[in-house]
Length: 139
Image (cartoon, rainbow, N blue to C red; front, side):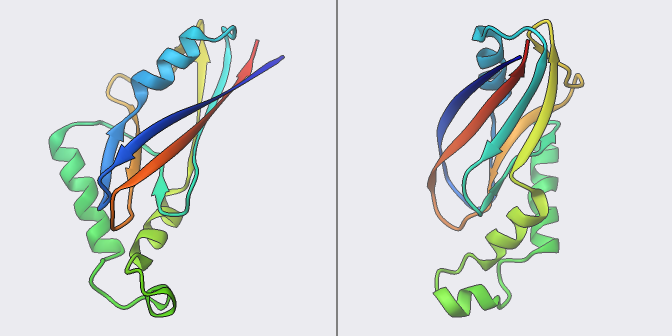
């Protein structure tokens, strides 16, 4: 059994910015010494998440709209009262989404569906520099 740890760094715009990182994850798997295993993709921070979606303009807009309906930015949050940073909704959204994803891979290829991409969603209310931790486990 082998473990490989990598970091993917990226800059985001905040406000539900979505960045497709599928190619970067695939490159790291291809360049590793592991043929079969699992990839854990984890984002550091409490205002971002990692899901899979079909990364196309309509669904990207639908995804953002869903977050606006379920955890709106324009309502009072206790977090904002305490810290004054206006990103209480960002923390709620990230908590609902979750910070990580596990994707199996075989023969150095992820077992994603045809229209399934791995994305980073930055829910914060400002641009950020983000670190995605990629851990490959396998043989």
